[in-house]
Amino acid sequence: MSLKSSLLAVFTLGKGVVRGLPEATADHNPIELFGAWFLEAQKSGLLLPEAATLATCTKDAIPSARLVLLKDFDHNGFVFYTNYGSRKATELEQNPHAALVFYWPVLQRQVRIEGGVTRVSAEQSEIYFRSRPRGSQIGAWASRQSEILPDRLKLETRYRELEARYKDGEIPVPDFWGGYRVNPHCIEFWQGRTNRLHDRLRFDIDGTGWTSKRLYP
Image 1 (cartoon, rainbow, N blue to C red):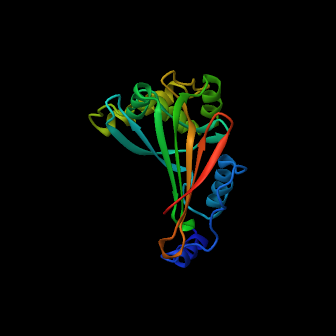
Image 2 (image 1 turned 45 degrees about the horizontal axis):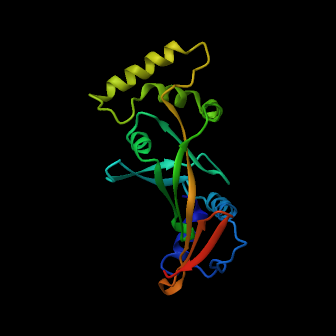
Image 3 (image 1 turned 60 degrees about the vertical axis):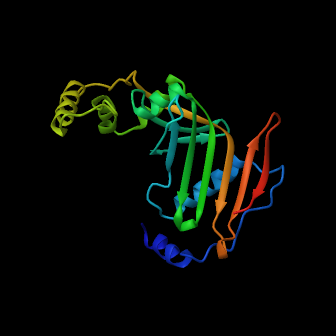
């Protein structure tokens, strides 16, 4: 955390934030508001402001959660990447609904996103894969994510073998790896305020666009 972030943390700790959320009106756009908040989180000096908790459920409604990194977002949704054999991917294939939670404590802000989930195109996954460092590309091949690993040496050995195999050429995109997009139907913004009188603004999508409502804290 930067010095600026540390000072902000001390200043805001327990005090809340003076500037709150706008009133709920039909002309607000939650994707644009998220973009503005995300930019402020990036400028705050927070480590990994793109980190979000991803909650999924099995077909029997047994939940699980873990952190993922947001790699892209627009009016169509919020994108992250993973191994398609991982637990999260297995649950998303069984039950294609998820929730994302971003929390930026220095700014006393939280964003909750709920929606259906679809895979991004193979072309989009490849574009992102090519942007990753070479070591991360090899790592995607080396990891059989969520499977039992007898010992770390096996993983490191597999990584070195793949590194040698692809040392002179382009690393192909694994067919078991790619992106998911959370297509939001509900986005809620939470802004910390004094005396725990926090601001909460929830956006719900309907047939014509977004509607918004203010909620009690």
